[in-house]
Amino acid sequence: MYKPETIKQLLERNPLNDSVTVMGWVRTFRSNRFIALNDGSTLTTLQCVVDFETLEDGLLSQIHTGTALKLTGLFVESQGKGQSVEIQVNNLEILGTADPDHFPIQPKKHSLEFLREKAHLRIRTNTFAAIMRVRSALAFAVHQYFNSNGFFYMNTPIITGSDAEGAGEMFKLSNTDFFGKETHLTVSGQLEAETYAMGLGKVYTFGPTFRAENSNTSRHLAEFWMIEPEMAFYDLEDTMELAEDFIKNTIGYVLEHCKEDLSFLEQRLTDEDKTKPENERSPMLLLEKLKFVVDKPFIRLSYTEAFEILKYSKENQKKKFKYPISEWGSDLQSEHERYLVEKHFNAPVVLFDYPAKIKAFYMRLNEDQQTVRAMDVLFPGIGEIVGGSQREERLDVLELKINQMGIDAQELWWYLELRKFGTAVHSGFGLGFERLVMFATGMGNIRDVIPYPRTPQNAEF
Ligand code: 4AD
Image (cartoon, rainbow, N blue to C red; front, side, top):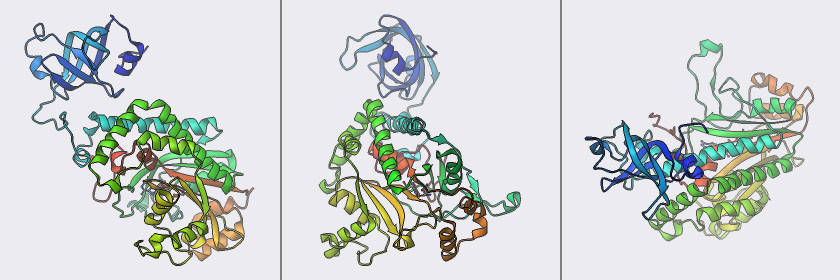
């Protein structure tokens, strides 16, 4: 096995009565004797017992929360309560000190807001280490899922010139001279992914995406990671099927592989809920909620069916919605989505066949000429987690739409050519990775599930 060994590997190997070496950061140090050491590989801290009488002078006074240590000693069954094994230290090396008067991550409760300002150190807390391990496992599950289902991983450009997605406000790049045209950071890799699906069959992207919307909410970032599968010969039904199966699989993966971290996060959420008014508390425990999503089929209904439910709901009749539902064709607000998911169905919901007017130009027009083959997956506590569609593969219809929406067709010459050369039914969707991480970890603010959040007026670190 490759050395140095992590605490996780050591605990799995369990080399009783062997001499072992570990490195990590002190979480707590009590009675001048017991060091709880963590190295990030697992939530579990390793108890390391030092004999202060034989310890070199001056070493003891440098062991504080946050100090980096290298320890060698005998790995033995623990005599104490609270842990099954421990290291009886016979050699201790201070790698780096952490002055307790200045190191901000002390063993006490810190607010998430405080930790956001210490984003470079918050990974030394159990909460953030657990979140980021789950995030990493989810990313792995994403690649594993697509890889085992015949998809190819592709990378779409981050700097793009096509001003066509219509997904959101763009960050413009200032040096127009360099490319000889206006460019910006991508809001979605979809259009380029479509070109690759029409040659490789099934592809997916997983990359950074940028939106300059000035929405300071708990669910929006200016820089987030999006997963965008795109499939030739898939219609909308196939795509809804895929989105559901994909989400169930990735959540299933972390349920199986991140038990310790998820249990910790569940407890954190339960403790946090106790500080909230009853009606704001989560109705299910975290693990229960994740299992629910994996086991239960998602509810599917059309925009029109959802519109009817909302229109005749008590909330609407009693004018409780901030945006009353009156006319077919208006966009659904998050209060409406929440009503459907959290009150009416109490399950994840897939809405499809949205009014053409409120959706992007590339979505396939239905026979009724009013709706398009679009779908959104709505999740409890999260809102929209997936947005996707069957793409308009008919050149004449696409050109008409582009004209009607006042989009510059010249910029999209290559996208239109796809419809001239071997066009076929195809579809895809985008899933906001941070929203998936929020759901899996039970965190309520998207700023806490990405290492360095980018939001309006905030680009520190
Ligand atoms: O619904 P959106 O805008 O869809 C697209 O961009 C399509 N081109 C995707 C496709 O069909 N290939 O975004 C997709 C998802 C949303 O459902 C949401 O989960 C996430 O991306 N998202 C954001 N996540 C964090 N911060 C933001 N500002 C987000 N905007 C969208």
